[in-house]
Length: 81
Image (cartoon, rainbow, N blue to C red; front, side):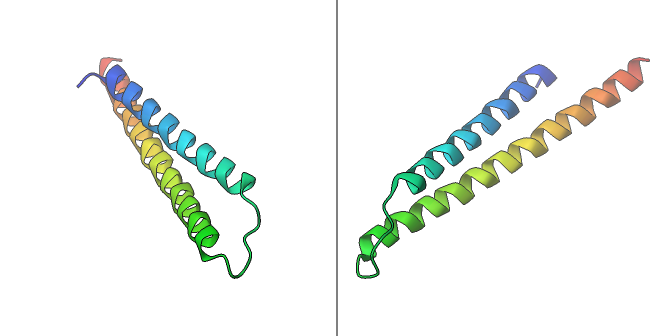
């Protein structure tokens, strides 16, 4: 795999994680404060919180991919120099 395609994949994965975070955050922000007796609204809020956390983990994994690509690229440059 070429380093450019790896970096492109990592960037796309980070953007997908960011989109997931943005969507979940918007859904949480626009939802009304649920009443204590409305368990359906609490379930929706809980699902959005899980989506928010999932987006965070997606973005963190992508950052690790970007760091790995950076290290490989640095090694390649050091080897050529």
